[in-house]
Amino acid sequence: MGGPCEARAAAQSRALRLLECPAHVPQPHLSKARILAGRQCPKRLWLQCNEHSLATPPDAAQLAIFAMGSEVGERARALFPGGVLVPEPPHAHAVRRTRELLADARIAAIFEAAFEYRGVRIRVDVLERFADGRFGLREVKASKRLRNEHIYDLAVQHFVLTGAGVDVASTQLIHVNGDYVRGENEIDWTEFFARIDCDAEVQQRLPEVRALVATMSTVVSEADSPSVEPGPHCKRPHCCEFWDHCTGAKPKDWIYWLPRLTPKRYRQLRESGYTRIGEIPDHVSLTAIQTRVRDVVRSGRTFISDGLFDALRPFEGAFWSLDFEAMNPAIPLYAGVRAFDMIPFQWSLHHRDGRGNVEHMEFLAAGDADPRRVACESLIARLAPSSDPIAVYSGFEGRQLGILAATFGDLAVPLRAIARRLVDVLPIVSKHVYHEAFGGSFSIKNVTPALVPTFGYSGLGEVQQGSGASAAFQRIARGEVQPESIAKLRADLLAYCANDTLALIELIQALRELVSLGAAGAD
Image 1 (spheres, rainbow, N blue to C red):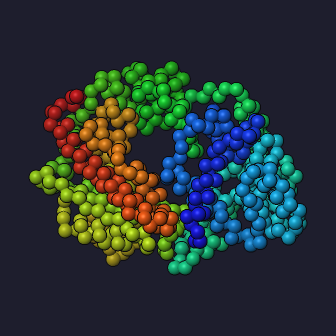
Image 2: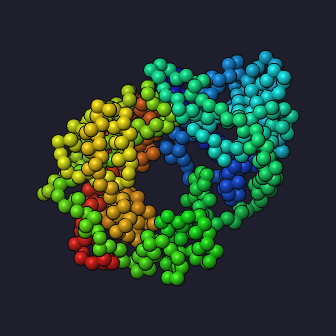
Image 3: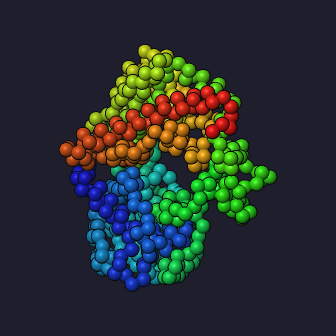
C-alpha cells in the first residue's frame, strides 16, 4: 500500500487538527464537522471552539478509526484520474490554490478543495469537473451504507459550495462496497467503492442547514457555553469527546446508568424530576432489571437470585474460559475477505480442573497472512480432546465460530462441536446478580472487580480494551510497527486477552461463593 506508516501518521495528525480551534482566529470558525457536532449538541460545538482542552483525548482505537477514514478517502482518488490534491492548511492558502485549479479546465478533479462562505470552512473530498463546466460534489466515507449524518455532511458542503459560486450539478456519497471480495492481487478500487446519488435528500436538508449555520454562528460567539444536560444524545450519532467533562459531577446512581434505559424513558424520568436512581418511587414503572438496580442502590445489599445455583451447574466440575480478539478493517487485508469482515486473530484459554488448578493457553497470529485458519486449527487442537464446558462472556465467540465453520468447511464439525459447549456467563450475571459497584453495567470489566476486589485491569500496557487490541494488531499486520517495538506490543496483546479469560475464571468462582452465602439479598 506504499508508505503506510507515514500515511497513517499524517492521517492521525489531520484528524486531531480537525478537533482543534486555531488560536489566531479572532472568532472561532465553523466547519462541517463543527456544524454536525452542534446539531448533536450546541454545548459540544461551543466547547470544541472555546474550551477544547476539556476534551478527553482520543485513544489508540479512535485514532485508528480516524486514520482509516482518511486512508479510505485517499484510496477513492483512484476513481478520478488526473485529479490534483490541494495542500494542507493554512486554510486561506488552500482556498487560493483551489481557485487556481477551478480556473484550469484541464484539471479533471480537485481533492481536498478548500472553500469558505459565511464563516464556514470546508474541505471537499472530491470536486469532479464536468464537460459543461459544472461540478460534482463527492463525499467519501468508510461505511457500507448511507447514514442520515452523511446527508447533513453533504448538505453543509453544498451550502458552502453554492454560496462560493460553484455550480454543483450532482451530489454523491462514495462508500465502501460491502459485496466486494478482495482477490489474490491488489485491491481493485473501482470495484471496492460504490456511489449513491444524494441530490434529492441534500436539497431537502438545505433549509435546515442554512438555519443551523446561523444558529451555530451565534453559539460559538457566546461568552459562556450553552446549558445542556448530558444524556443519550451525547452518544448519538457519535460519542462526544466532552462526556467525561460534562458528567464528572454526576452521582454514582445517576438515572442514566439504569440498564437498558431508552432515550424516551430517560426523558420521562427527568421530566418527572428524578435525577438519582434511589429517588425513583415504587409506583414508577421500571423493567425488572431496573427495579432490581434501584432496590440495590437503596439498600446497599447485593442482589442474589435463588436461581443462581442452578445457573452455575455447568461449572461444578472442570471448565474452560475462552476469549477471542478480532479486527474488522474497512480495507480488507487478505484475499477472500470483504470490507469490515470480522477476522479473529487471537484467542486465550484458561482451564480450571476439578481440584481448582488453573492452566493457561493462548494463540496470537503473526499478522503477515490471514490468521483465521491457523487460529481455528490451534483452538481445535486444544479443545477437541476435552468435553468440559467452555465459559464465554457474550455471544461473540459463538457467532464467530459459526462464521468460521461456514468459511472452512473441513473444520466445520469440530468448530460447531466447540460452539455447542459454550456457556455464556453474561446472561447469568444480568439475571441473577447485581452489585452496587456494577454501576449499571454488566461488562466483565465492571462486574469482575466488583465481585473480586483483588482483580483489576491496570498495568496491561498499551492494550487496555478490545478495540485497542484490534487497532494494535492491525498496525502489526499492516507493517506499521517498528521491528524493535513488535515484541512489546505482542506481549501487551497476550496480556490483555489472558486477563479477560482469567477474569472469567475468577468471576465464576466469586459467583459460586455468592451461592454459598445461602440467601438472596445478602451482603
